[in-house]
Length: 127
Ligand SMILES: [Zn+2]
Image 1 (tube, rainbow, N blue to C red):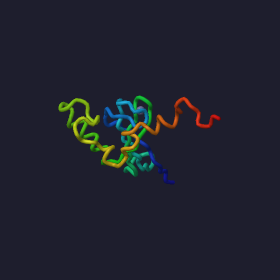
Image 2 (image 1 turned 60 degrees about the vertical axis):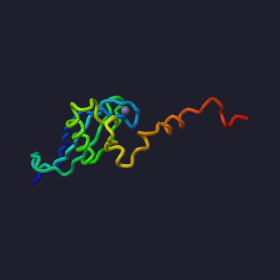
Image 3 (image 1 turned 120 degrees about the vertical axis):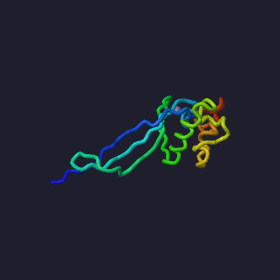
Image 4 (image 1 turned 90 degrees about the vertical axis):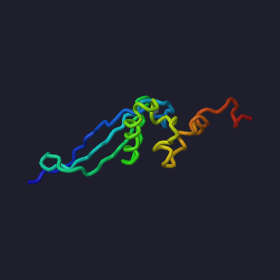
């Protein structure tokens, strides 16, 4: 009888200060790597999937990243440690991995969130 399955591992790679796409706060984000390994007789043999993501420590929102994005974030966080203070806030001229992927929407404009929730004063359906 062969017993096999998978087992997940969660690694925290770094703590990064990023502007959150959900709450809009420049808060600490945990950069995480989740590795799922194939196990045989409960012994992990090889990874079957590796996923990266960040989680906002302010609101708890998670954002998936590619490995490339994760590498960039790591490189920025370690490389720019003593250079320009806080990495990832857009002060260094690099738009970062978020901007390069064409996902600028939720980060750049806070409009859609504010406009949908609250209607200014007057009710358009009022007669
Ligand atoms: Zn947040």
